[in-house]
Amino acid sequence: MTSSPKDPSPARAQRLAPHLLAFGLATSLLALDVFVGLMGGPAPDEGGLLLLSALGGVALLGVLLEAREAAAQTASRVVALLTVGLFLVALTLGTGGVSSPYVAFLLLHGFLVGSTLPAAPTAYLVAILWSGYVLGVRWAVTSASHGGDWSDLPPLAVQVLAGLFAAQWAARFQARHREQVADLAMQSAHDPLTGLQNRRGFFDGLRHEVVRAQRFSWPLTMLAIDVDHFKRLNDVHGHATGDRVLVEIAQVLRQHAGTFDHVARVGGEEFAVAAVAADAYHGRDLAHRLVREFRTWNWGRIQPGLAVTVSVGVAVLPPLLPEALPDDVMEAAMARADRALYAAKREGRDRVVVAAQAVVALARG
Image (tube, rainbow, N blue to C red; front, top):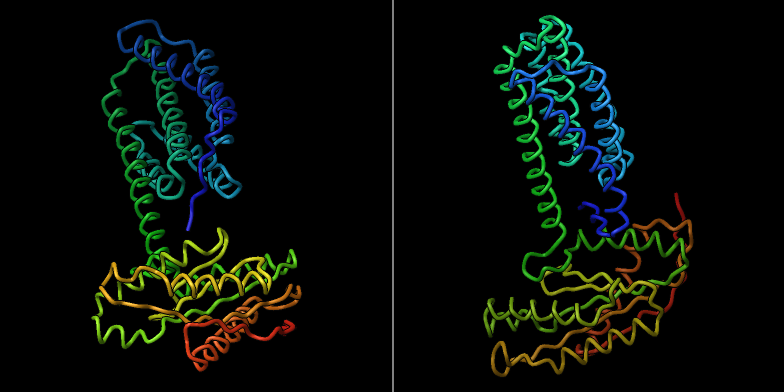
């Protein structure tokens, strides 16, 4: 699958700069105030703390809105998790603060945030919640003692560190899980030997191309490619040589296929190319170029005296009807290309056969 690429443009950096500056200023002033309190200084002004907290919260909100990860779905999760987290903070403060049994729920909520959101929203959201918790405990202690008693500082520090660790650990675990899922998805859609798409990946990608072709009235050209006498090649030269031949074939196909074309290994020695927005002339020309390229390719690099040729069947789909089902279109295109390929083999191999034109009228239901 997949993540969206980050926007490296200077414009995005300029938009983020004021938010980051405001957040850094607010957190620095809050940290300075806490330090002064710990050193025995005067009790903080509650109005000033409230103002700094509001400034930091607004800055964080701006960063979240500007971040690439703050898409609609992620933003809705952020709002929901923030709402639940603020409720837990209030519940914890209202039932004893540092000694409240609901601190455990706040820790679990941080773990949930880390396992649900991407890394950047997780960091900001956890920082907001635990900052609010620390400020709430401070205000409660200051109001009760009228002097800023910080005897609860050690357990408070342990709770905050535990909350940050839980969220970070969950975020890292979730990131590794996403990477593993993405790797598995890629492996399931690609051939491990050649790196090309396999049959599943080919048809998944082609399904989207069919939908676009229907929308923009583009033609599609399907090439079915088979290595001539590949079994004999394996028997004579060995399977290791056969694997190297397949890798070289994949390289040639990548070189000659278009940027938006789909190239796949759909069977043992069978390959396919789906040329996007390609008419009959383009598909036939591509097929003939491939046959000539394989015929003259320096196969002697793999083993002296080795020669490899291919047969190609070409099927061109004219601009597709909007009501045609993508799966039916793909099956029809592949079937016609396969029939043309079998005809090329019957006629002697090392050649191209183009299937007769056909009108696509595959209606729904």
